Image (cartoon, rainbow, N blue to C red; front, side):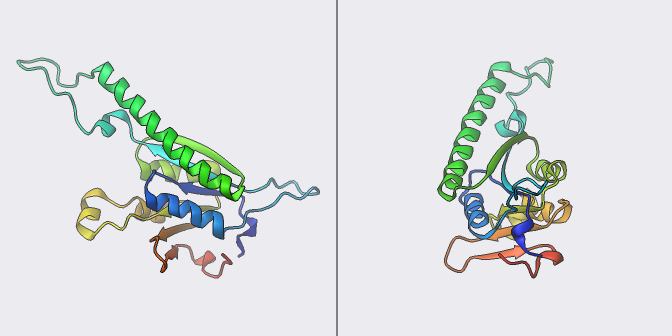
Length: 188
């Protein structure tokens, strides 16, 4: 299989250096389907996907219960609004950085922002878009951190409905894993 038939390549970005490096890798190494005048196929594109955590998770805390028998699940609207505004600014900065990288390569790009658990929302976006390939960076957490935090890339490798490429490292000995047997002989 060659990568010139790729219609939709999702690149998950979270603002980390690793995810932006994976985006650069995808832009430099993958060839998308081009649209021919006599063909019904549309040109391929990169879908830059950013997943925001819900405000309650992003806050990482709850203002706490009102003492002496008050409600325990009280939500403070101003607190939630402040978290949402902050997340919006972060998302805008992440997408602006990603689009700047893409503009340097003159790539056909779309963006999508979803709210929820990253591992689940990435796999859901793959399924909903009919993506041909998912590209992700890897933070290379150690085994203890990975045990407590989980690994988004590991989850997506096992649950995404398309091949997954995990790009590791930024140094000169860059490595990547192609996690699909049908892509092991692909031309990158």
